[in-house]
Image 1: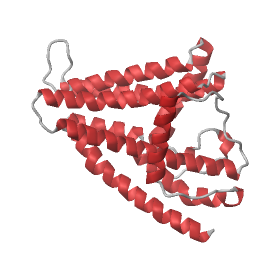
Image 2: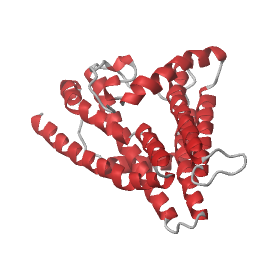
Image 3: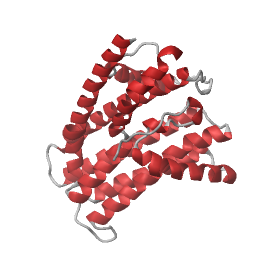
Image 4: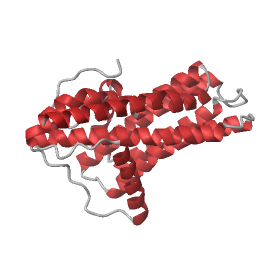
Length: 287
């Protein structure tokens, strides 16, 4: 199962396992957690972890690009390229889970690090979409760029709203246990980064039904109501997109993933929005 039942934890326990998807709990995060103390002992900077993960993801995008062509000299055949690309995407997920932990452990959290982490995530997926689009453009598929853009925009929406659901849940967990929010760097980002962040937040708020002021008296009720739903929102996570990309590419072709994103994952996204709105109305009525 991709989503399942996990006992609720106090906010002080780090990641809240009850809202993490199965692949994070059983694979990605355990590997990340095992690497973090080693990185700290070796003096590895968190930004280096972010960039190394991004490099693996960018190479994965290139391999998915190559997987759309007939094998040539010096290049793996399509199936091998897909498998290698999937393995490198897993490396990226592990590094993406480790950089923040390492920054907090070593006291090296910074605005720059946060920006590098976010840009790296987008760069990886842009390389996937652009790589697939270029390969099919060169093969004469006329509609490939609108398809890739539609899939990419869909992915941004999925990521934005999924993160918003997690943020609200974590805030409720902190309110329930009177846990203060984690300290963030005092330095303000530049105007370009601030604009990007504002647009991202606007997308989140427009797609997300508001649930005002979850205080200590209602926080536990919020967690009981929304924990299963937030787990189901993990169907919009990068892990699921990575798995969908791999299965589409290995069974049929990388271009099929674009259709899966636009039709299949958007259908799940809309269903989750409807269910979330319904549960939010019920929760407010019961306060």
